[in-house]
Image (cartoon, rainbow, N blue to C red; front, side, top):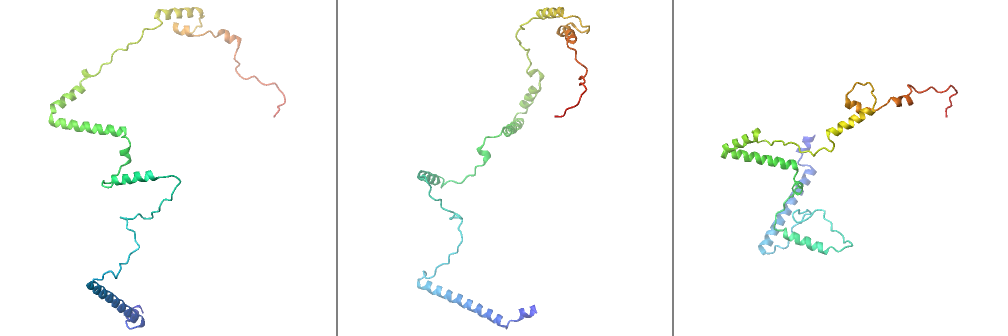
Length: 216
C-alpha cells in the first residue's frame, strides 16, 4: 500500500504539489527578471534586503539591559572609565591569573632555587670540572666543618662547699630512719614519725550505726 501511494503520481495531491512547485519557480524567475531590468536601468533601490532577527556578537551585547539612574552622580566615574577604555583601545587584552597577583609560595621558591643551583652546577661541570671536584671535596672535608666551642656559663652563685654545709646542717636535725640511703637522700627526707602517731589513717571507712534508712 505504501509503495502504491509513493508510486501514485497522477492523484489529486501529486497534481497539487506539482502545480505549487511550478508557481514557485515562476515567481522566482519573475523576481530575477525584475531585478535584472532594474539593475540595467540603474534603479537598484527598489528592493530591500530582508533583515534577519539575529544577534551580531561582534558588535552587540546579548541580553544587555541599561542600568537605571541611581541617587548619586557617577559622571566622574563614567569619564574615568571612558578614558581607560581609550587608553586600552590599542592594547591587547592580557589575562592575569590569580597566582600571578599573589606572592609566591615558599616551597615553590625553594624548588626554583634548587633547580637553578642544579642547572648552574651542570654548566660548571661542563666548563670547569676541576673546580667542581674541588668544591665537592671541600664540602665533604671534616676539617672544614664548623667546630663547636665550649659553653661560657656564668659563675655559680652557691659554691660546692656551701652546699655541703647545708646538707650537713640538715642531716644533723633529721633522725635516722633506718632507710640505708645515701647522705643526699637522708638530707632530703622529712620526718613522718610524729605525723603517723598523731593522725593515723584508717584502713577503711567506718561502718554507720544500725538504724532505719531514710530515702529523701
